[in-house]
Image (tube, rainbow, N blue to C red; front, side, top):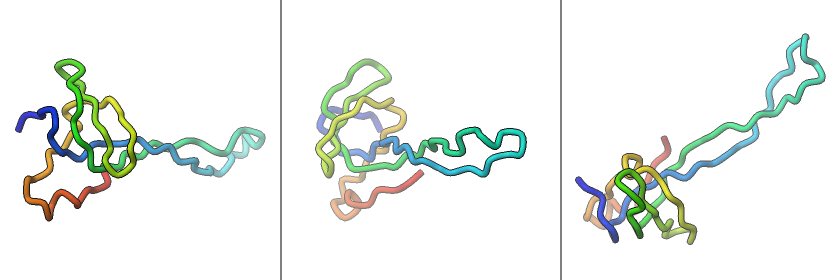
Length: 89
């Protein structure tokens, strides 16, 4: 299915979470916290097509916009019961 302007989709949003790591004996003074990327999908409406591989989406539950690769958009069914179900990757 092609992605079109105005279409509802599940779109990824990157969450950066700190994760504490155990210091190794050789690096006891090193920073023991690193950022972990997690992608969570949220309901979004396609607002613009930037180019052949990128679209801008509006996250309907959060109010922000992001540019994302088209191949990461998951088209939501026109069945309204399914539109509310999004998922983690």
